[in-house]
Image 1 (tube, rainbow, N blue to C red):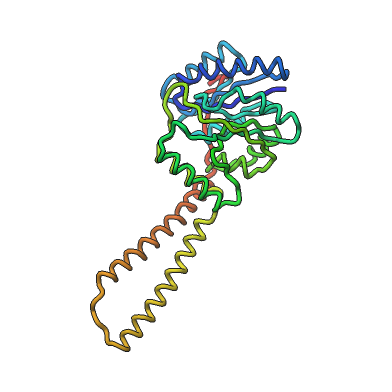
Image 2 (cartoon, rainbow, N blue to C red; image 1 turned 120 degrees about the vertical axis):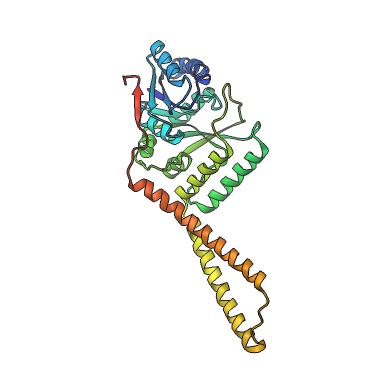
Length: 313
């Protein structure tokens, strides 16, 4: 039984040795208790620090360590997909290098899959302790909004840390779309999932690579990728304003016939024009977002480009 640990890394030079040490400890315990062998796959996502150097050093001292280095930064989603493609394990786990995803949960997660009832053991945070309050509030609202818009359930607090059977991994790999939102993809493919709850853990080293703008774009990616509701909102807004415009025309005609044609009301007219123009631009923006995603998909560009692996450059 081989278990693959996929670890996307972007400027994680400080965290990688600490992760490797803890993961190796858990791997040794699971070899004794479960007879499991491990491989560690580090995905260097175009890092600018010594991440690639550390990956080379870890591979030199432990042949179980493998790595894939991108030609530039393609993003964490591309890193996860590359790791899934490279993984040889019967069971595959995706984890962060900063130890916010505790390897100590792996034995219980594996026991769940070995029971045969589940194909995925996933984790979710019960608290967001340590995060800025505003960021936590927006995160909760995102999950509420996307679950109302989408038929695919996105679990609040879900982490990318999960252990999957080979059957589920193959299903995820079959979705080779360019615009990726892994939380949605993992839910969309189905398969029975057991959730493991734990409290938020601080990074062991380094700083987070996510800022508010990056998380906002990521949330838009999720909504556009797994819901067409925004298009319905745009269409509904168009119908509503057409009805209001028709009512307004009737009002103006009736008023002109009954009371003449006074010239007052220019400020309110300008406000109405600005409001209508704003709604139009908003709706065009929604359509444009879907069109942009379609444009990127039809070009069929590779999700990532490999510059180096442990097998050579």
